[in-house]
Length: 345
Ligand code: AQP
Image (tube, rainbow, N blue to C red):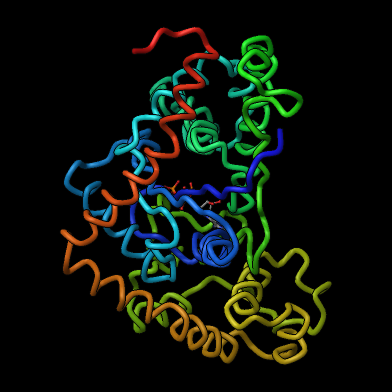
């Protein structure tokens, strides 16, 4: 069977979104909604794999939704909702918990990074996170998943789960009329865009992340112009001037990151940025970088703040998106239950 192209992706409401989320994933999301049926989720079930203050979580769900819309997602065209409103995610995740193998999850580098040394104390949910992510995508039989580079390994696992489900249940799947392609598609990662891995402003070897304790490590999509300029000013650099060739960025992670961000924000290539700024000190480059970041991000922060003044409207958008998402997932889940051998009324 040929699968219709459908896009699914999500972000965690674990704080404000940042420049990495924006350049690494969201710009692709905005582009794809012009040509595809897109489902964009605020993945609150994923968020609680680490502790979230309940009131803060509610605020973050609305804040992330506001940022999606302020950045350019159109909730009429795309489906925008929070994950916990559609039970198919959790239901299918449980089935996938029984399809995926422990050994597969044990290889996931994100779990190792997030659990750190205190593995015994990490939640079971954090370990099983990639199974829920596979369920998010496959509950809609989505074919394309625009994400940043850090999600590549999880996407590979989602593909393995889809394939194992198709193999394990081959007979009932064929009986249900699904031939060669199997029941679930192999979802394709879409890891393209101006910057698929944006690094921390404080350490060019670590990815920019919501959970980094230092707010100076990231530019949030809620930061105002002064805050953005201050963070760029304080960004870690090395003492050398900028090189004129891309080759000269090797072994200089902070310089490479800042040049990459500037190129992504202005639509230029890294080489053309270096042709302009090669030989300059960071101080003059940072001024230009701050201007480019403010020009691009300050309007998003303003619009987010405006949307956040009407939480009822945000909740209405989420409810509408959830109803549309349920309508797609429900018949798929009915078929999954038949295939697995459950009785349903
Ligand atoms: N630094 C980054 N560069 C490029 N893309 C990134 N993404 C995240 N950080 C970067 C992409 O943004 C999407 C949503 O990510 P997420 O919120 O689901 O979780 P995450 O990847 O774990 O992001 P954070 O900021 O690091 O969150 P915390 O700290 O809460 O874990 C994904 O497509 C991701 O690839």
